[in-house]
Picture 1 (cartoon, helix red, strand yellow):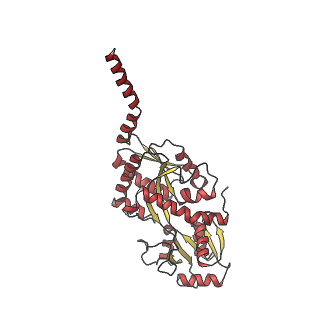
Picture 2 (cartoon, rainbow, N blue to C red):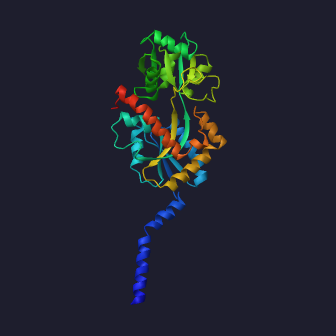
Picture 3 (cartoon, rainbow, N blue to C red):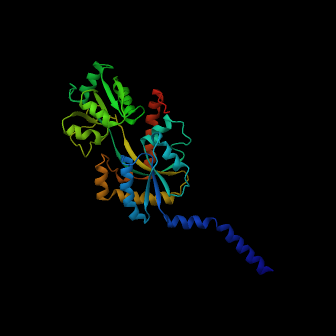
Length: 329
């Protein structure tokens, strides 16, 4: 009887420990099957291109394919919601950016919290916007441009890819900081807006390097400043806003990886290490640079750095969005 009782107690102890064993073994083995990275925008855009570039390299690091799934709609909130609802096991991740993990939280009535319902995994790349104008603009530097705008309130027009876009909100931020006023002309994308800027139909734009730099180099538009602390490697001759006399007038265009809330920390660390390894690859760096993006420094590629960046961006942009009263339908 004593032996039977001892065996029973041993079995009971094993049974109690069993629930912890699968998680431990699973965490050690991760990944054992393909990983899905949801890009909440159509294929062929910058988020898609960055995800596919990183994914190809991560496959060799983790030994499992990375499947890029495009789920577009509602400024990225539909695809992002798909990740929120996924099992927090590291097999469904989101490519997030300013739209999905900052602006949407202030513009949409979302069924999730852009901060609390995600775990930051890794910052992939970042860039900024350039302040550009038509060639006929009389000012030759940023101070001169702002002086001209102040002398001609509400006479200039700027183009953006739509109400609530980062370019639109950046223009409001610019006007608030510089004390200028000008009219907004929304377009269905930067391509149409830049065409009208070249044709002198609008006066100013705040746009990404991929859209603007070819036209600057061709002598079709003027570039006044990079809205960042550092000059762009792709355009070392264009001064920063600090150098142009308006320090701190920054706009960050970034891409990162986010996981559902409660994803195990060891899984996040393992995927982050694979991303870091990918970002150190020369071919990956070249391909991301061609998209007008730059690779962050190693200490900015961490999950903690991405979380800090997102928090700072929310604190900066939510008051601007709410003050203007932009609400997405």
